[in-house]
Image (cartoon, rainbow, N blue to C red; front, side):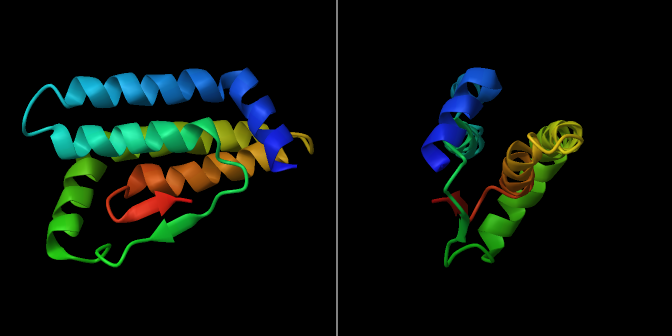
Length: 122
């Protein structure tokens, strides 16, 4: 079921979204200061390609001071916009019964988009 869901996800926007995250992440990596944030955007892009059958795993360093600082910076500059887009898409998809599994994936990606440091989608 997750294979079929991932294929449908990729056809109807997941591929374009994933490439967008990766291109944005590589652009952010052009500056030395932006490398940690660019790597998180690339991680989010890879997670966006195949969200079905994966769950959010919290690392052991998820609550460290540096991770918290990076998450706050990410939240201020990037995270809230990305999470808002996932929330809107999820709410639109949740209108129909067919869209409910896809809405669930958007809500899952919204959590990682808000606080990506210390969390992975595995």
